[in-house]
Image (cartoon, rainbow, N blue to C red; front, side, top):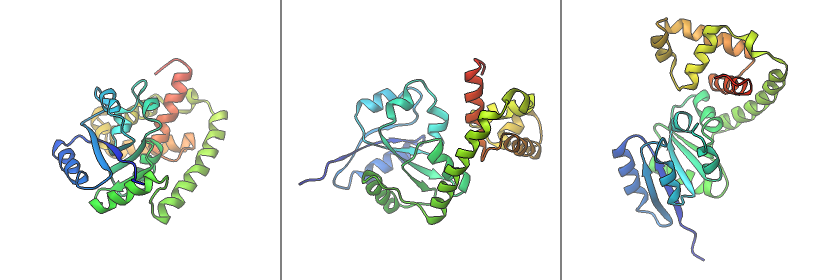
Length: 223
């Protein structure tokens, strides 16, 4: 019995990278690239019309583009591999937590690494190092504790106005350096604020803080 063709959509801001990856994947049986887009802002409906069953997504795109109404629900059943992930614990965990990845590849990964991840993800498996597996389990435990804290915390009295402003800029996808430039303050000052925010909210990373702010302000009708 012939294996079902994997219908792939590529989402990457670099056109040359998209073309190169399409060409490489097209050399393999059972792999078919059905859509290539540079962002999800205006192209996600056309991409989904091609009926992909796997998305290969550039790191950061789901966080920056994925908040649109209807998008996350529409792609919730489609497996995702996030590529170009910085080799840091926080970024790898965020691609799972924020971008909904079933698999990921760090920046120096090879085509063979991608092929192995595609096969594993389509089998319902995930390839990750024991270190990342341990971090993921630890994160799940931390999230459970965070939910308990959130139920008893008061956001309005917890963060200062500047801290809340920084969390909103984090939610926009800005780095510490970009936040410092936007607010005309030192990068070290931003880092201190982020540390205080995470400490006050008992959260694990900056992405959790942005998610918490959105939940709190949406519930109260402000954002």
